Amino acid sequence: MKLTNISIVTALLFAQIICGQEPPNQQNVAPEYMKPAGSRKFSIEYNGKISEVPEGTKKLRVWFPVPQNSTAQTITDLSFSKSPSYHTETKYGNLIGYWEIDSPQSSHEFTMRFTCERKEIVADLAKLSTDGSAALTKRQAEFLAADKLVLVDDEMRKLAAEVTKGKTTTLEKARAIYDHVLGRMTYDKNHQGWGLGSTRHACDVGKGNCTDFHALFNSLCRASGIPSGFEIGLYLPYEKGKDEPLGGYHCWAFFLVRGKSWVPVDCSEADRFPQRAEYFFGSHTPNRVTLTTGRDITLAPEQSGAPLNYFLNPYAEADGKSVKTEKTWTFRDL
Image 1 (cartoon, rainbow, N blue to C red):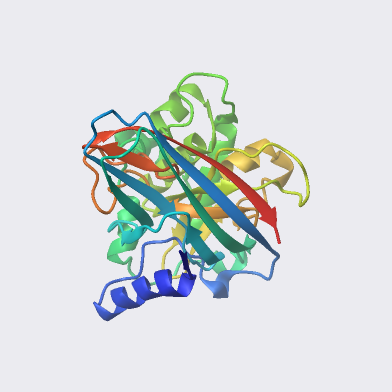
Image 2 (image 1 turned 90 degrees about the vertical axis):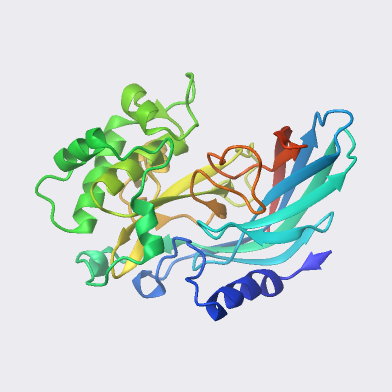
């Protein structure tokens, strides 16, 4: 079954507008604050496998993250090997493909294919050097709250005050926080506990991957009164045609200059490529596709288990209990 982006995403957005709701809570960069930059177009094949379904299971439920349009990416030619129903979770507006299977086999596989045209985002920081006067919307304010592993407590507020001392604008404070994260953290996955996106781990260990870097960035921004959020998705090689192993995922962050725009940052890539640290404050490369936004995600339809730390791999439950899932993916530049 092949469904276009217009038939799925635009229809959902239109329905929300008609009902008087804000559009999905994605962290879109306002076009008037974007400098001209490059783009990249590629196709993705995302394969999800659900295995170890217990014998005698009556019902298997499966959820897939489905990419959406934004000011950074345009999704077309979306198709699945088995037709899902589509749902939108309420907190972030993430689009979800969903299946229910009665009397399932011990394993099932699903394939999602789509084309993504991804813009390079280069924010015009000069235009963002002062704050706007507009109040936060209800959904923007949600990015001030703590997540289960992204702390906004007295310790974070004290540290944020120290890091941003003497800074007055959002841009100045966010840059001080960005520099602090780069000074405190090292990209290192050779230890236990990395990859959960834990502020506590980032502070105590000072090492981790993209999730840990951006947990600390999110915490310090929120503790400073700056809305800050998280996206996760797939990350292609920087160079077209380069044969190198694909990573499992990548995540990145944004902060909000209120009254103006969300601003992109990529703290972990700045640590991996320190010569590009200036670039990654205010810019995102086009070799990526966003699958979902946010942490502590309650799916739609709602899962029986706890909210997901983040939603990247398929999630599945057999008679209400989670079962093993895994993903593989490939891409082709167009």
